[in-house]
Length: 302
Image 1 (cartoon, rainbow, N blue to C red):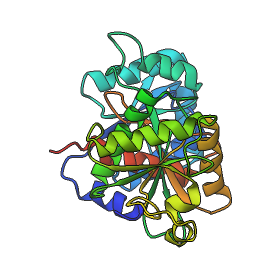
Image 2: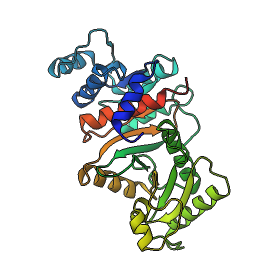
Image 3: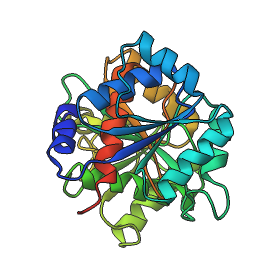
Image 4: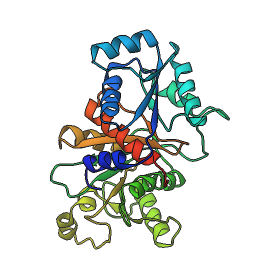
């Protein structure tokens, strides 16, 4: 797939429709995105939160709640727990953060025995449709893991590969990006990048070709790679960018959105269900894209 439109079409064409549980749904921006997803038949919502406020906001944004399940739970943390329960009981397939802080939202998701733990690292996968760029680009991790270790980076890549699989990207290529293209023991990210590349070469990480360290320019531009004399099956053709830490990922994320006018989506992977965890600064369209991507991921192989 090469666009968010293709993702939405794939969701619409799937015979099994999925349900999204929205925790603390009394949030205007979130309800606008959910309204759009509902009207487009991308998702069936369950809205959990302060019912009076949900209905007030729905009226303000012209969201007809006829036939929509609304569960009254004014306590934000309890609303998140109830959304988690909907996933565990099979009534919903995706969970979305509403008017609740990220920390309590994730606390509900990670509760022992009753949460959505799998034992895997949770990581954020951002997907970008960049103008004049030939393919969708994944960036990970820009929101969850502050300074991931080498084993955590392996799981972050594996989480991203679940996304590329659903996007039907055959033999995705992963670039471990750093400030330079050479290994420097004073720059630990370059050492990790080289180890990830060797692990891929030896078959310790399957389903992708990894190379690194690569600077961003030669990860996405064949011309830049040629100028620097870099010969690599990944250089210039990366589908997945794994960043060294959250600062690099956050800066790259916002650069693509605000300076490159990229359309974007984000999903947290590694739990029992896709997690839509968007920023309040994200546009309604970005939130809609995130819902559509999560719906695609929730389809499984049925």
